[in-house]
Length: 287
Image 1 (cartoon, rainbow, N blue to C red):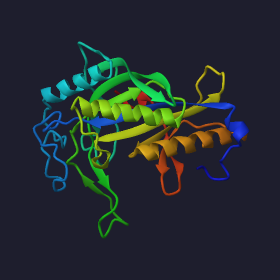
Image 2 (image 1 turned 60 degrees about the vertical axis):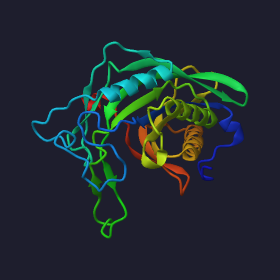
Image 3 (image 1 turned 120 degrees about the horizontal axis):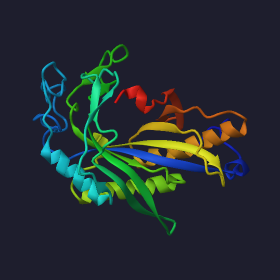
């Protein structure tokens, strides 16, 4: 639950409606990476499943994996999407220590699949949650913040995950409760496992979820300002984070404040979301 300082009254909460959309990153179950022949096996020694392509070394050129494309198409069809006959990759530019190229190879204006839906049922009510797009991209590496004697001073970087094939599944903002978000992610995971495109093992990072959450007055048509909650690595944390964030935003608005568009992290120990940075826009990535 939210803290006493942020918990709105039942009457105040009843005046607002949550608006929720999910962005789900799914690692495809290919044996090799999306643009090179390095293995995607989990648990290898750090920085051993790498080559000049996934390290972004000068002169190294990517070659697209047919297996990754086939799996992305299969996922799109399973999610009732239209498969685009032409799609293309774009550079998503940003700096982070675990991204050696300085950009991610992703898709922007022409993704591999669009306009699908996922059927859910909550409390006996059936509803279709729209899928805006399914696009392909390569994964970044992994920053390791604990497990070493000197992690109070240093962060370690393992680049084995660089270049692992992902699909990002972006939903429409069609969910109106944490229960609907939980149901959507449950069905999504079941579908992807059934068609064999991913193990969806959250403990290994094969399925990672971000939630875009806003609130608006009931009856209003215009969406409120959203906050993006990053890296929700369990179904339970997804539900708890959304419930907290909705309560926080209602409390801010009831106190006369304004919601800032930002990226937030969920702390399960404190059961609260914490502001991280202002939310990026597409032009910030210079696609």
